Image (cartoon, rainbow, N blue to C red; front, side, top):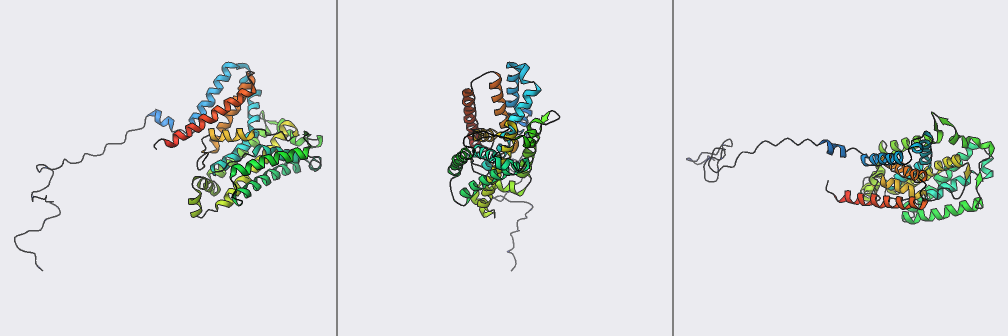
Length: 359
């Protein structure tokens, strides 16, 4: 079919407006040409500074150091006091690494202090000590991992709420430790001096137990940030249903998270035995408070899905330095607990505010 005469087809190169007049840029009433997009403004140095991870925690730690240098300059900056801070942080720090995994995975573990006490008592019974220091260490680690595995089974496959399951383990582990020790402190025997040497032997002026703590932190960081296990931990904590649809066995992964927490409690039991040369049912009292608070202050969400090992350790150091400052200044222990409680509340409020703010 031929096109009717007298009507030329419109060329796509010369658009025509509704009235038939050209719609070029010079036509009357035509829209002004769009200007070139402006280049994005460079972020200010202050905004770049705010993007540095954990800057607030480092600043808070530096502020506490200034307070220590002002209030007790001769004591706080001494090498012995700094080593004491690291030694005190080592035991709770190992527990904090395990607690970080559990909380990022969307759970909570209230039994860490009691499990550590149970592992220390079990490892210092006369029957266990008769086999030597290596068996004592293995026993403590296995008892901690076993208790954590029980927590994981109850939560993942028994469908118990983590708060209830770990609270029950807290009570049961503390009671079992008291039953085994008859409420008495068990001393590490002379033949097992290798356990005590972890605290007394120093390399470059730092006790061996601090190096053990550093190795656990490094291993935890690698596991969380460079392995499939770590990526699955973030996925399970962020959205369990989406993780399940992605092919992750959420229940099995949750079980292993609590087993890992128990394993860290077992290692911490070895460190507390080295520091105190004892195993006792009173070890680890309120350690769950310090560990969970350090994780929260470090930026880990209580709802799971976000957090870091580095942030948790910085939060732990803040708590440890606060405790050290209270002791050096002769302040009441009750005031320490009040200060820690206030810090926890402020940290949670800041978390909620950051979640509500637009990204």
